[in-house]
Image (cartoon, rainbow, N blue to C red; front, side, top):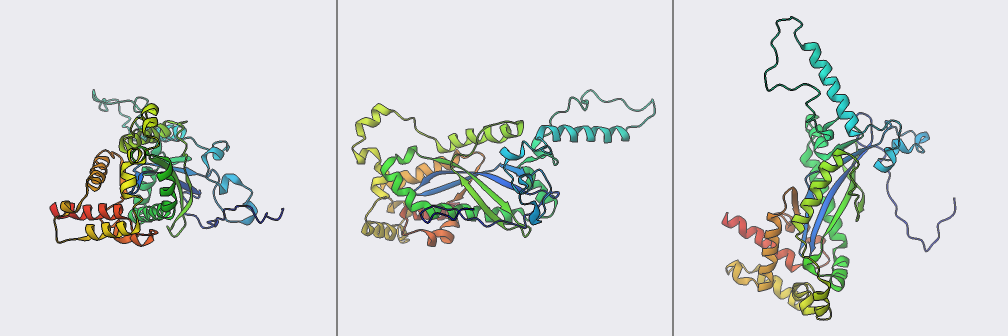
Length: 351
């Protein structure tokens, strides 16, 4: 091929040659992550997701590298494979197999008991969740979680790695995002839903493939609908976006104090003020609430209201332990993150 241009931008990824396999197939995990604020940083992960399988059994033989259906897990690619099994088809096949198995066990005598009034025929029982069909080329994350538990795999260890990767990735871009946010948007009107693609190797290490800023919300199957309808509903409910009125915004567009009152007061403070704020919030000799400014109280109220609206999201930052673990990775002091960390400690004292 051609030599790369010196001025070009490149993304270099390590190929995972030893992926964890399910029935011989390679797969990736699509997780949905919601960020409702970068200052303070608030990160939620949706409790459901997708598992996308390659459609030919995996081998690391170098002669197979051109076989995209073996090495790539993209749904947009594998749905065209001749061996792709849709969730609906897999669920129907498993229902049929279960019905046949049940039929063999039925007593053959004419005086066998008749079904009760509440019994359903196999055709009527269509309650199977497509996401649980083990032969499908797409699962729900909960189906994979159940698979791991059935195999004796420590799901909490996998989940902890996922959360760690997500938090560190956001911290790595936090300072640059804050600069853009301060210039371009209102703090209480900004949120972002991300699609995270991850993979496991055969040692159950979690690897990040990519982060999508515009994850697909299209629903081509009932399985997609079961995941994504709830995802959209829960995202809007948790984020609680405020309707945008262009005319009203134009009235204060050039008045920073009215446009972004909380961001201007506590996000872009001078280093001296940041240091003073950190010192004040660290004071354990006074009641915690006495240390707070009106802006800090508003920040806590917003955070608590948002948390109570989260439904099927789990907040992974902040928690009672995240400040101590991740504080060292930020570019500098973050008073609002420290504020919420202190608030979490104070809540535990009162519980």
